[in-house]
Image 1 (cartoon, one colour):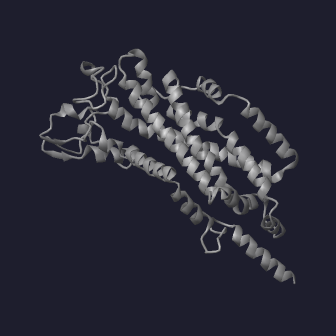
Image 2 (cartoon, helix red, strand yellow):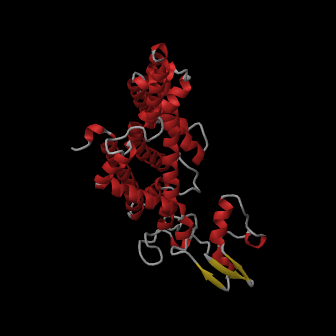
Image 3 (cartoon, one colour):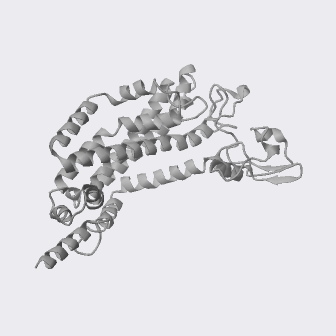
Length: 359
């Protein structure tokens, strides 16, 4: 009899593990059902595709816009500077000595050369072409230093998406840990952490970000850390509520009866079944992080001046209000990206919430 009970509990625990334990009558897992429901939400699905294209554009920004050629013949030698640039990024190569002295490859006067479609680097200064209107050699115009706005927009996608995703990743880690501990242990631990959540939520997040940013030098690293450390409370409270609900299920009691530690019970048996609703605020959080970074860069306390982001492009319009393209171009990019992430969040909510299915 005891062996039968233990076997039954083992089967129940196995059903709770991983992403395929919640199965429908047709044999589809919870995540397969969620993906099927998500595909029915066309705005969310198209937003996912658009964000995927933006991610590819961010990864291949140097292939689209830059002053480093695809192919160059210089002094009889053949070089592929763009490919070399990616190798330098990942640390598997370095620039040859003959190419280290100049950052602008246009000054080499090579015998043969093929440039990217937009042959300008985001930080390439051309004072003779400052505040050029869109069209001609610069499709989206230039700023006060003659830098190409389209090149800055493309490379700014890399920084803006990186800041948004990394910041939310930090918030997810903090929120999941604190929320899981509060919801699973309960008692005075839950009471203490809940008061911290309420206190943290009472502080306006953007003012907290500005205050924290004032204590650190302008840096992409510190901006991601600051935004991440100020955006975890919503995820923590949602995680707590999920753990409070799931910890009373039979398979959790079975795991405890079989001697599973608290850490294993939380990480292996509860978290996979509680993670789905937590992904929804993560999508909205990326949009919030991009807005926060844009606001900081617009105020001049975000990333360093040499780093081009959408917020820093927008800040350039303050010195010349007649340069409307410096407002419209980065402003539309911020608006479109935030809207895409919000639509993605709506799609995830409809797909991951069983109460929304069939409506």
